[in-house]
Amino acid sequence: MPHFVSVAHLSKFSFDINLSNLLYELINLLCILHLQKHIAMKYFFLSALIIAITIAGSAQGQLKLPPLSPNAKITQEFSVSNIEISYSRPSMRGRKIFGDVVAYGKPWRTGANAPTKIKIGEDMEIGGQKVKAGEYSLYTIPNKDKWEVILNTGAKPFGPDGFPKEDDVARFKIRPTMIDGECQTFTILITDITFNTCRIEMVWERTKIVIPIVSKNTEAIETNIDKAINHPAGPPYFQVANYYYETNQQTETAKTYVDKALEQDPKAFYMWYLKARIEKRLGHKDDAVIAAKKSMELAKGNANEAEYQRNNQKIIDEINKTRHRQTID
Picture 1 (cartoon, rainbow, N blue to C red):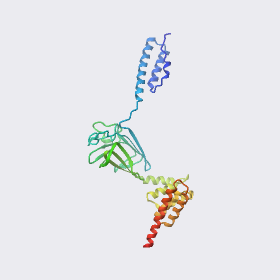
Picture 2: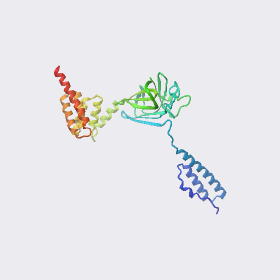
Picture 3: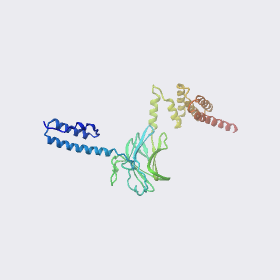
Picture 4: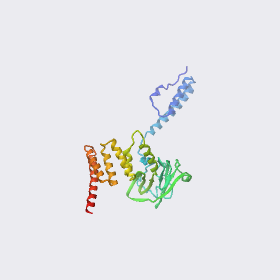
């Protein structure tokens, strides 16, 4: 029986790569099959060399240094879905950016390392153009007076010839503005969020562009409301009443729903505050004052007592001021 080199003592090492395990299996298989000593030794030393290289590579991969252009991801609830933006954030580092690092008149991946990605969870209007729900690469072509913004289905980094225009889903132009001071690191923000509008702001150096976003969500929201209100498990009367009030629509329906919500929970001071605002909008001054006082009474002892005392008193004062003015007239 020829003598073989044992590999059992190597089990104390832990390897993250499957290649290492396969090499061990190869060595053990050679031993089990009783190959000639010189053949087994040949494969062993070859395998040991590859394993040593793997260990060295793995050790190098563990080195963590601050990235020049760190990755960032924004996930923002908007309308009835989300907007997600993934991008890399290069910094100025003493450089001139637009017209130099980022050339004018040429496609830019709008960040570093790879194209910026934007994912929308529903159909929207971006820059005035209709865009279907999905994920897109966001490119720009900066210029001094206008930027061209492109949404493209391509996922790969573009080369010197740009990216395939046939994959574009939207192209529009935005006039840049100048900011006070300097933004050292390229930044994308989602701002000015309403029930159906928001803005994507991109800022770097002293330049800012703003992309308007509109969600045509009225039909979808009404469908969701209709399903929820008619759900036997418990209609969300308060949520729907609050939505109608905040969007200044169907105020009478909002009053009906807030009354139903109060029937279910008559001690909810925040519901009485909503009722006070709805009644005031409808011109029901006495009912608005009654609701405001009820909200103030029920809010006593709550952590938000001061806020509700102040807001309800404001409603009462505004109504009294109106009555006083009417009396003078």
